[in-house]
Amino acid sequence: MPLVSDEGNFNSGTEQERFVDAHTAAAFLCLRPRRILELARKGTIPAHPLGEGQRKVWRFRLSELAVALCSRGVNYLRQSPAPKESENGAW
Image 1 (cartoon, rainbow, N blue to C red):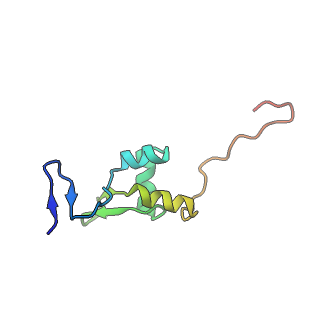
Image 2 (cartoon, one colour; image 1 turned 180 degrees about the vertical axis):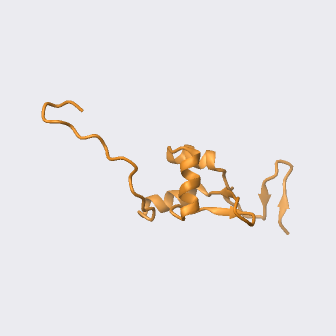
Image 3 (cartoon, helix red, strand yellow; image 1 turned 90 degrees about the vertical axis):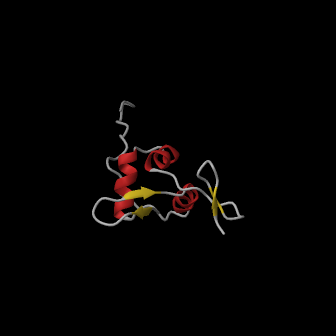
């Protein structure tokens, strides 16, 4: 039977990866939390919505995010292109 420890950790006899919020996922991917939520709503990154209706709470597993990025399973259009160097070497 699954148990919850005093710290609120799920313990079923095997080690389970914890879910993290958008702030932690954003720090992991070096993005802003708002961008993480946008990508989650679009289905661009693996995410787990909690709740019914229009407003949801989103949770993430860092391992799923890492696998998606490494496997190039995340497709997104760049918001703005990288600056190009001019002929004289200036940006």
